[in-house]
Image (tube, rainbow over all chains, first blue to last red; front, side):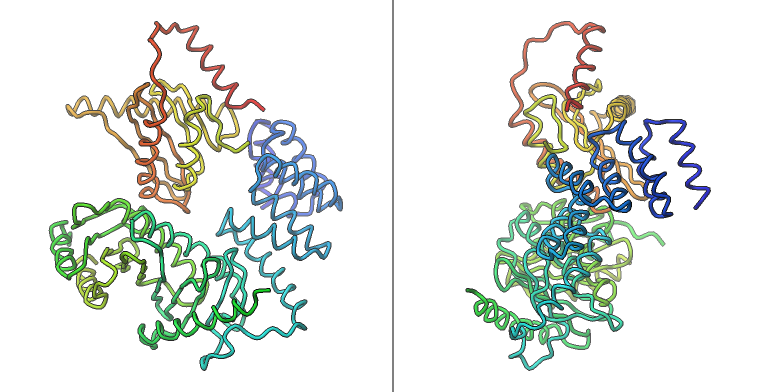
Length: 260
Length: 119
Length: 156
């Protein structure tokens, strides 16, 4: 690692126009060498004042150095030019979470996720914020989405159009993977809708995916929501579809009941 | 042993003989390109290939994260038709495009047979 | 301001549509001589110049191979790396021949890029303005035009 940092520093010294400063600054941040990280970030900004990645790096260094207000200004300046830049939304989401503004944190992180659906840092940050939100809402008595079904709610997820979990649970190796799967599912259904449209198949209705271990059934109870039902492969696809239909109806009823 | 595209086409022909099937293809998973196809005239094979490969790839991310294992088969159902995709190996998919009410079980059977030829 | 910058404004919307659907990270629309009409995602003028020059050279050299084979011009070229792919294609418009260079990551694919490239060509041809009468191009004019294009592409 030290050799890599040294090599990058030498390259940057040799060629100040090189974009290696982005990786170098990031490595210095991770090592805790914040003064050096800030110098590198500022040198890079000097060359590339309008590069979103350069501003993003500088903002992250500012947060590390305990200057969140300045960092916010930098991220907002990025969004003024490039409104969906995921790094800026991720940073502002982090600041909002730190300030206790969970709604703003969710808005920013979901925008970041929509711009880059597979970014693991954003997915993890969303998971943390959503867990906090769920804990905060735990006192509210809201009936579970699938409570009227005979089947367990486990292995079912109802998510909104922004990939937020509205109900259900999904576990893997003893921990919840609901948020992560919800994020990937958003990408799946977006692609399914696009494929149906471009192949002139009409409106997309549902999708079944068979995995090595489990099968997944994905449908849309309403235009703004997606429903996942997952069961072991030993459950025949027809029975999975039947269960999914019951879950679909339960989800629609629940959604209707939540309307003000 | 090298399997020629004629053998692929023979396998695909069996799929297209199922009523309601409008096209069958062997598609590369990474690139979404056609290796072999048997298509009705109005079917845009390159669009089927690219979009199905992309969808399958995203489904694979979801099944992996959910702990369901690697994606093996995908059935996309729309109002006016359906797409079926079978993973033959790490590199290839067998894809079928059919009318909405086509017999999926029969198509799937022929796709599995085609997969044996292609593998 | 988006990250698509067009010296020729009529190219902006089709290029943005292509980028959005194909999921390409970088794109360059240029003439076979390397004059850039629009770009997306590039942050340095030197990178645009390099990419344009290399793309034009590739089109020219593969054109020579096509001629040796008595083939019409090769329409498309693709290179796939571990993390990125490069797609290069030449097509005709009423105005001029144009070349699209697109670079995509693992979230896209050659198939998707080719698919939406076809739509891109249709859209470009549809919005392409009528050609102006040709005048003789002098080396000094070419360099002036190139510098003006680069300045426009990176104007803040």
